[in-house]
Image 1 (tube, rainbow, N blue to C red):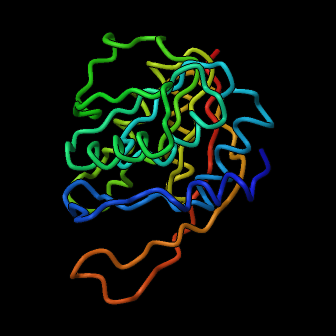
Image 2: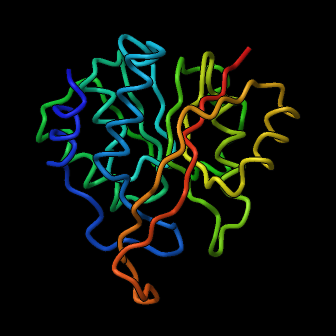
Length: 208
C-alpha cells in the first residue's frame, strides 16, 4: 500500500466527538499516523504478521492503520470507553477482524501484566503538559516493558534530552527517525488559536 492510499484511508476514520481535556485527547492526524505506520512497516518490517499494541489508542487511528497493513493482531489500550466506542465503530466500518481493545489505565498498567508480550508497541501518548505531568514517561516505560522488539512513539522535541537520559537508564537504544510538526487543532475552550504547530520527534526505541 502506498503512503497516500494509507493516509486517504485513515482520513475516513471517526475521531473524538467530545474530547476530554483531562485525558489530553487529540486526534492523531492521518498524515502523521500514515507516515509513522508507513515507516514502521516498510523500513523496519515491524507491522506485518506482528503482535502489535497501541497504548492510549483513543479512536484507533494507529490500530486501524496497523491492521490494514496486516498486523497479525493489534490490541488497543485506552482508559476512555467513549473513545473505545468510536474505535469499535471504525473497526466495524472497515470490517477488521485482527483488532482487539482493552479498557484500562495505561499509566498504572503493571509492567508484569503484559511483559514482553508484544512484538511492537506504537503510541501517541499524552504529552503531560496539563494535569498529567510525567505521564508521557509512564506510558513509555510501560511500552518498553511490553515490547519484545521495538517501541515507536511521538514526543515533544523539547523533551528529547530527558527522554534520551531515560532510555539510557532503561538500557534501550533510542533513535529519532524524524522531526515532525504536529498540527494541534483547537479542541478546547481555552485554545485561542485555530491550530498550533508543535515540534515532535518520531522515535524508535530498540529493545535488546
